Length: 267
Figure 1 (cartoon, rainbow, N blue to C red):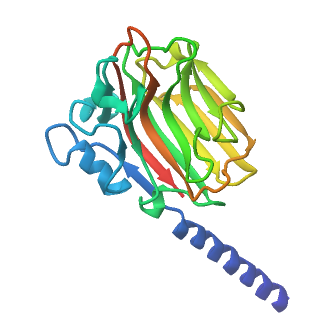
Figure 2 (figure 1 turned 45 degrees about the vertical axis):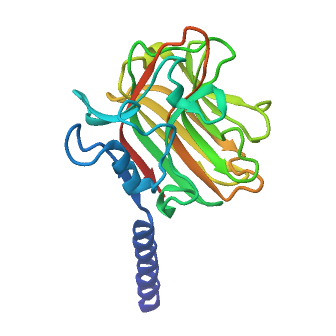
């Protein structure tokens, strides 16, 4: 009986130690606006958490700024203009615009992912209505999970606008877009002008789990996915998230605005 008690006590201690260890090593970074015309600028807020170079694209207050929402409070807002908005051109790629908040190789370790790690990305966003749906053949991403270095061309995961839908897509390779697969989709009319919450949990391995849910703030699920995919690219050093607007330019393209709140990265 005494031996049984000792074994039970030891087992309980080991389980408790494991739970404590798991709690200690799990960490969440939360990025939020502190409000327009007060506190830090949108760029300075991102630099606090993501590093000194946290934006792909222009960082002026006409493209990246803070605003407020009745539903979620203070928000980070991104705006890209019409095709004449040359400031938002993606460097030498003059056929596309980009303003994206990002983690990258020099970011703190708690916002980028190494091989074998599991990360949850969770955020709220609103595509300001009427948000432009691109014509067929013109890409438009509002979230990307990308590799850095090696086979890092095409993103691993995206939320993309196409054919009247918001699509959750995956590609196992970066060299071409030939193997892009739509894992889930919802009619874009379900989210246009509405606050929604996305959660994407990824194991960053060659055969890693993916769990995604997109829902309204009242809990109504708009789309979801659970499965296993190739989530690590040959030669990559990290995986990193990107939020914002990355789109191909087309004729008579209108401006686009999107708001973000409660951006969380949990490892």
